[in-house]
Length: 108
Length: 187
Image (cartoon, rainbow over all chains, first blue to last red; front, side, top):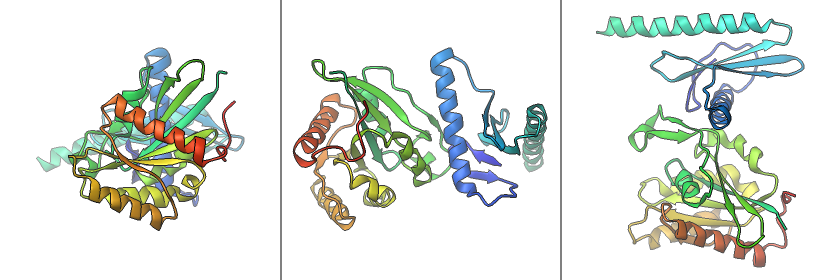
């Protein structure tokens, strides 16, 4: 799911029945809190946030380079390799940024 | 005695929650503001999406007051769960300069009605031009409509003494109006 950084859904593909609006708001809160924690304790900025449960893992990352201030949230089953999830996230981010650039070029 | 008390600032976006905490806190406040992407952009540049946090040492050796600010939009209502334990009271801010001031208060009361019935609350009208009497009455009506009773005051969220005065009213309510905080107290 892509969420706007202030917690509204932007685009999503979801198989489960979770509330997209709530997931978007929670994604925004988690990324903002993680940023604040990193800023306070290490003057650092967030690359990605990983939450692992017994059955699932959730990866959240900022979409850098996007004009729309987006967050990408990926929910995967626990057995899926983290590297694979992060790799797919990077590809996804790249495609979104390229699509935005193409759209703005076409509009000019 | 080194007890920790928690209060929460609530209210519509732009009502002054982050400003109140910045005015009161003795430590640099922690904020989780991000750029607005919706209609709020017309009113302000950023909005809180998780919480604001600050601290205040109470007089003598009476412990610390932890200050939390919740996001104004109801889509973030789950953040109340984060601050619920040990909550000592709530300050509900109303933006007097907004045409939707009462709608904002109504949405806050509707979203958190059950939680607000369990703790002392004070309604604080911010950004008033000095003629907020009618707005105060409408706030009282809105509180009554939601089965709540609370003092309604005016404050300038940028003035520390104003925020302290609201806090003192909250403290008085707790002392004389509530036997104890029903939601538990932080050790």
